[in-house]
Amino acid sequence: MKILVTGSNGLLGQHLIRQLLNAQHQVAALGRGPQRVFWQGMVEYRDFDITRYREMQDLILRERPDVLVHSAAMTQVDDCEKDRAKCREVNVTATENLLEAAAGCGSHFIFLSTDFVFDGNKGNYREEDIVNPVNWYGQTKVEAEQLIKQYPYRWSVARTCLLYGISKNSSRTNIISWIKSALEKGEQIRVVNDQVRTPTDVKDFARGIEKILHQGAAGFFHLSGDEVMTPYQLALATADFFSLDKSKIGEVNSNTFSQVGKRPLKTGFDISKARQVLGFAPGSLQEGLEGLINEAM
Image 1 (cartoon, one colour):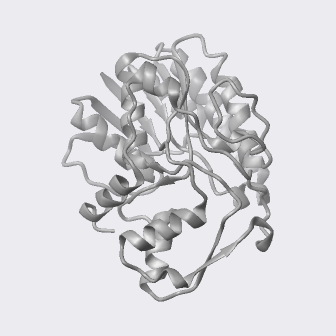
Image 2 (cartoon, rainbow, N blue to C red; image 1 turned 120 degrees about the vertical axis):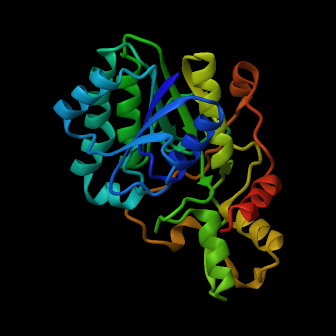
Image 3 (cartoon, rainbow, N blue to C red; image 1 turned 90 degrees about the vertical axis):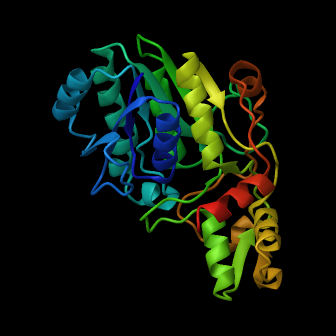
């Protein structure tokens, strides 16, 4: 199949493209700025602004992808609160434009979303649970999901939770890389112990997305790890694995930080549907950390 991936320079985009190439798909990739991973001519890459509707429509009609995986988004929660207009343009308007363009060739549209569509009062969320975001980032993702449901051809929404892994040539960090880097420098860090998540290895998420497109599966899917833990517990596990000093990790709660965007307290996913329908089987945190060694964090 021919797959078009937006946000290809990001953490997920890089790993998803690797997964798609391994599965022998033809891949076209869109990102901002220079290509961060050189795929030896196997990927057609374009530096592209997905908010430019007319150019996007022309590109999609020219490429005619079998599947469009929309990974690009504005995801920094506090930045989204500070610039709501830009966040909505990137996360909602651009998605609407992509949907209109993709409908011109009947592509299977796969949208990537987040646990932050939920309010965090319940935890262990299933696909059919009611969304109720507590921050603007989550609100824009909910609005985009509503647009996806109106798409006239096959569509899928893959939500994930607390993604970690290694991205090449990127200044952005994720929770594992931040914890490991700070402790290696001997820095004191403070990590919340009153938020609950199901941390997700980016390689598992990429495999789950490939299963969706390979099987032509439609609807909502929760793709995450299956171990429930707080960021503080995750930090301790990371320190143990890499033999780093746990005494540098301070336990705090969410009220310790004056963040612009509110974070939901209890999220995490019930992944029963993904297991049954897709055969999705995430590895353990231990396996995820072991995989990071081979990628030279």
